[in-house]
Image 1 (cartoon, rainbow, N blue to C red):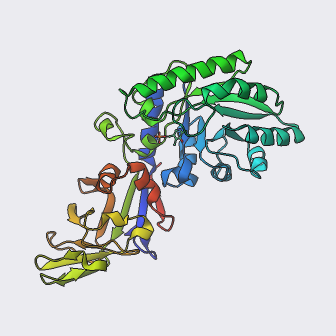
Image 2: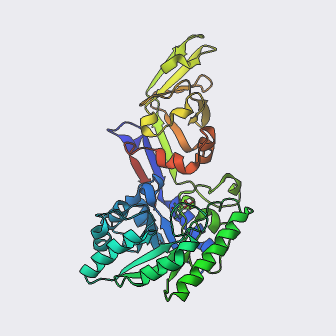
Image 3: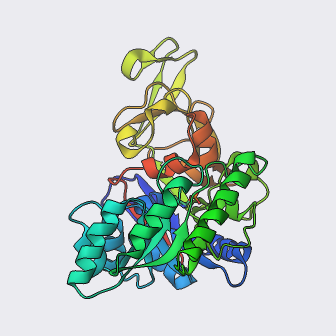
Length: 377
Ligand SMILES: *Cc1c(COP(=O)(O)O)cnc(C)c1O
């Protein structure tokens, strides 16, 4: 465990060469003349934005997308010099950070536009923004019927310049769903209104990863992939269709072994009772690390290239594994919670399915107390 000398042996391994491979797939899929905005919100989906964003910048990402102003400021701090789009909101008091860090806000309410306009004028600047339209996601953005009045209001703000038009798809992971066609229709109508009102947005964009790998929108010239950069499938039915490499592995090591007789109960609530003489391995990882408590009696890990089940309740800092069927397990043996080990693999998709969520949440859940170790790149 050379990565972990002097540390608890629980860590996340990030493969920057795999990240670059995935980036190239997204770039190829986007095609010539289409800009690529790499979505690195939520600490690059738990992969560590301070290392992921510079690596993607080196790989050739044209822009970056974050959810929060704070995340954009962090990207500047680690040397990102490309445009950074703040997909989430700009809250009162955050306007100076937008201007000082040359962040590009997505505007979805007029109050924010007024505040940003005031500060931009006070500083003698013209601030670029992207306008968000709600074409059917029902979350953020101006609805079609609000657009004419909104555009009139925005046209009267000399401190702001519309540089992009953005909307977000609700069912991009299901190419047959009729909602997408309706969203595209509304987006095109919004684009027509925006141009008729005299705006000339440079970036026109709709596509997340699922849309990038399943649809084409001729009016768009920018795509916003996130999950595929990290090697995650946008939805289970993309399995076998994309050439992606998983970037994250999550590992720990056996801390203690013990043999218990049949009939012995283990961990909180004794939700596991040994049916046979059983060898247990205690591993120093728990729900405080993002090893979800829903994996109690359900999860599987890899030891010596073989699968072993979680025995009983996952605790805050500890989990017990039934290693009875794996010969010769020793204290210190590597345990893989997510990723590859000797030809076997536990994917984020498998993990997500076991606990009824999606791979995105599996990645984001791995907590900050787990150190990230970077390989390759
Ligand atoms: C998170 C996000 C994306 C990226 O989505 P993926 O499914 O990870 O590709 C794109 N656009 C917006 C607005 C987002 O919030």
